[in-house]
Length: 291
Image (cartoon, rainbow, N blue to C red):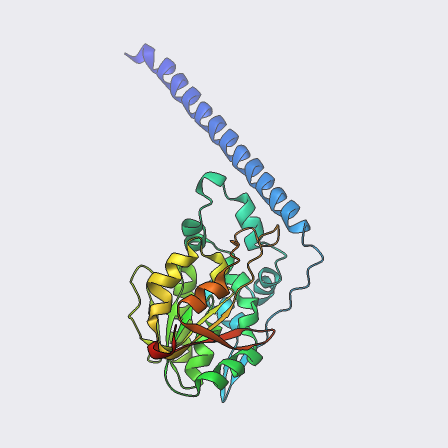
């Protein structure tokens, strides 16, 4: 038995050497693949290298201030300068994430639920502007119930709640829903804003106003969503406040095109009340005033 031990030791040593070699190859492959992925991301980001994305200023509403930059830094644990780079789409962007996602799983339902970069992309959308908040509150007044449909990082929901409205927030992205729950806790507005699950139907006639800003163009089955769920949730005389750029191109590869939104809304009993560069306001006519 003692004569076999040197051979057993040699075999064990050879096995450990093979394991170390295999581990080294796998680690090198992982590093190489990661470098290729980062290189591909830089290539896609170069398409919009000249894009100037401003870092969002805090949203002021009365005596309240909502700084999405500071909230993002607190939520993610990232340094503020790295948050700013993500907001300005220098490190990564939703476009790069879209193009680098394998086409077989690049489905709307999964991409929006799982996207990391939409958390930052939505923080600089037009509906973060105080002028839009003032416009909406000018139409709704300081009481009533509103739905922030596809509300992104939640600035609009927070602003509407600070303006006196009771707000429901609806967003498909799991990450953004969690971030908004964090913001509600941080700003003490958990009693004024409710975070909904998108798989639950909306209550008919529940809202005085539904805000859908830069979101309808992201819905693959828009007609069905509007007819079956979203529009019935608006009470008679209530408002749909929307901005819907139905343009699909390299800058907005996840958009869908829809040329008949106005016709659909009028058919559903809505009339266009006001329109400006920020949004359009539609009012639901009472049943006895529709054709």
